[in-house]
Length: 68
Image (cartoon, rainbow, N blue to C red):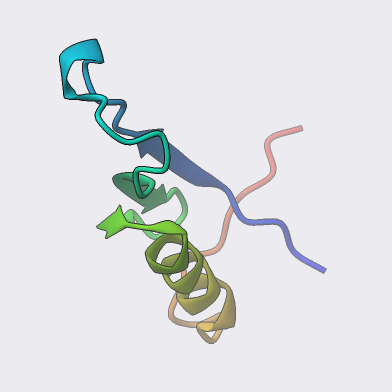
């Protein structure tokens, strides 16, 4: 088993822009090991990006060195 790290930044609308409590999740995501990144406009976009990185063959993603 291998662990992968993702950095997720979520855009939060300003108080004046909050006209709907159920706004789609929006932001940017980066796969730390490969430095691949994407914007997402909803939970499914975010999950699709993460699945794509996790399903990529190991030779496509750089090896992560454990410094511990």
